[in-house]
Image 1 (cartoon, rainbow, N blue to C red):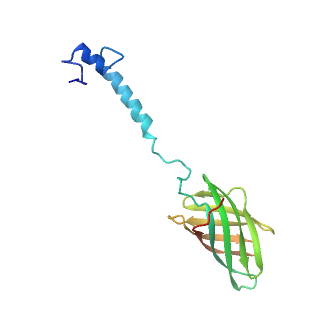
Image 2 (cartoon, rainbow, N blue to C red):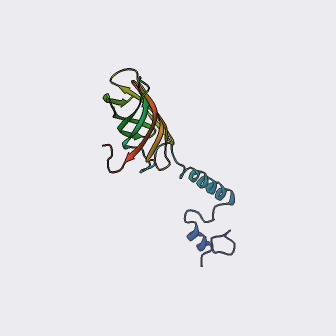
Image 3 (cartoon, helix red, strand yellow):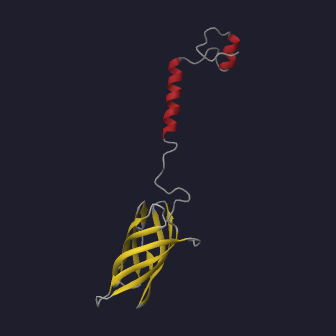
Length: 168
């Protein structure tokens, strides 16, 4: 039997088997330093980073509605469809808002971001003024509730991620 303890009661041959590079096992201070270094190195090994985990993304096609009062104080229900792509906390994409007056295409301007649960997208439309989409993504990353604005509209946006359709 080979003893791995303090070395007491073991032969020189046993010590060579246990510690092949020296005749004696490492001293307690050396073992303490080695163990401390291993523990410190492993402390951050499982810590999450700021980016999303695979499968933990808002990338995809989103659809929903934005009830909004028009200039005549009539509530129009606008339809929103957009495809967005998430890279870390950065979000890019484009989409359309459709209503009684037709479609308004938009793109996500520079500065789109997602830090769960907050999604903030500056939107550029073909006509001024610029718009935006700000609010919270659901815990399941399949729903959104917030505000959306653009040329001639502003309202509460309720969107959902469409399964089966993913951004390229």
